[in-house]
Image 1 (cartoon, rainbow, N blue to C red):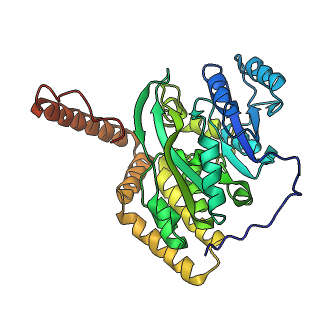
Image 2: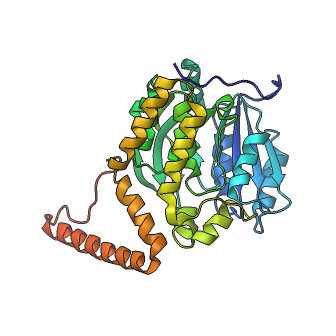
Image 3: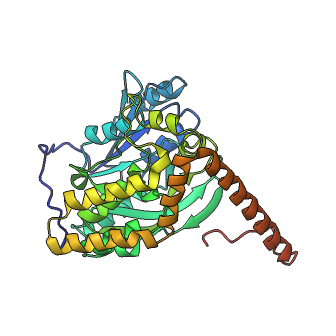
Length: 348
């Protein structure tokens, strides 16, 4: 059984929709219309869309205003100033009223049956806290880049330690942060928070709070483009990344010790969330094993080098890229002409 026993912190609203979708946005004019269209065209219509605009300076406000006037399910809130991504994501949640909740990025989309399938999966297992779905990765013009099921097999377990290990030992891109949550399970959690990697920590917290379910169809259309945060901000300038997360300057984690910071938060989650001594001991064992799984020990070592000597770290990165480039060249040269450069089939 799960150790998570949520207590209501709100009075149920009989007029509340079944699902709330929270869409935080800042200067999303290029894609936000397509994101909204995909939400409002869901086959499950008992929903509300909560848009929190972080004081955009492009055409985002006019677009969102138009949708709010045309469809009563849309609630458009424009912040008086840019709060940063973390507080804006959390504000979407705090304004939501539905039994189920999902964050939606302004540049992603959902297949029409997303909510219908995910709600059915959660209602079939009342102890589940999160439903993940398969992913179709798309480019700037909705072209398909790859398709994958994206299932965490151990996250369905009734064992707290097994679920926790399944999340922390697996290298993943945190797409499941955009899954469908049982809103009650998010109450009292860390939510998005204001540091890089908070999505990874929240997923680990959800694994501690209860089992997950899955709808393996590729229902989440996750967009890849040059202006995504991970490319345009996170990997370029740690100081700007902190401000992107929280414009007040209170962002607590800098990216130089990213992996160590995440690891420390995992320990805190176990102490905060797991009440059973046996389950807690199992989670501690998973945390000790973390150092030897999926290259985590090397990740922390690189964090230390980057903190102590940024110049040496940069030289190491350049050398690694050069070696990887030569390796790819050798592999391409060894392939038959009919295969070289064709790439792997989508979904593999």
